[in-house]
Image 1 (cartoon, rainbow, N blue to C red):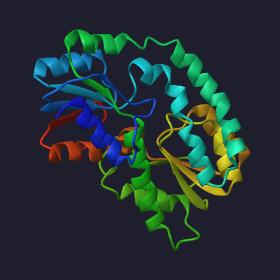
Image 2 (cartoon, one colour):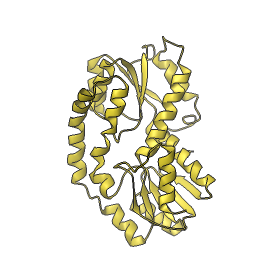
Image 3 (cartoon, rainbow, N blue to C red):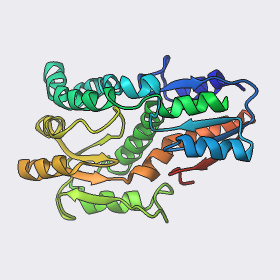
Amino acid sequence: MNTTDLMNTALKLAKLETMPYDTDIIVSGENIKKVLIGIDMETPELMLAQQLGYDCVVSHHPKADSCVVDFAKVMDVQIDRMVKSGIPINKAQKVLKAKQASIDLTKHASNYDRVSSAARLMNMPYLNIHIPADFITEEIVQTRLDKAFADKAKTKLKDIIEELNSWEYFIGKVAQPVIRVGSNDDYAGKIEVLMSGGTNGGADVYKSYFQAGVGTIVAMHVPEDVQKAVIEQNIGNIIIAPHMPSDSIGLLEIVKAWRAQGVEVTCMSGIVE
């Protein structure tokens, strides 16, 4: 296996033909037999991998080069997701722009070379795989929730929490599913799982979903300003399926495929098996 093989496996599972902006092979490598993968893999983890004899390091969250600088561009995938939920494409583009601009300001000024230069100096193959894993997670969670509540028009938020708590992904994990906007007996309405798209689209994006008929958004995390805005809007609910266990869902599907291809893979840094 080489780094291209590893990446192509992840892309295929995510039903993608090319690498998104937040996903790239930072340092390429051949003859990879042992991989160390985690949610956040930076210079300390690269050094650990070298000490322990790994051939490659994979980070879920983007840490290097164009994956960082161009991160705001990957948020455009949220437009397709919003249109799928009934939001007009022109409105979807406009409500996303403010958050994209804010992310671009931050990422453009970041030290994008910090981790990649360390990987190059160590000659350690290094990949960032973000949206592919998130696409996989989102599809799995949405499909399971759709199946669970297909014939339950009066589903309440407590029913969703109970369902999530029964899944192997969340049982026994430190962070548990939680209601961030709404209460146990509030009706869920239409449930949309938003777990891909780079990062949270912001309060205006959430509002557009609710105005389009979505009742409850299930996400991995929600910023305080978005939570406050949605509470004030008083038209929708937010449930959090916790970040690390949720990220692990898609990543472990990729890990499983790599292991089936004969690669030894060790998970750390937030991936909970």
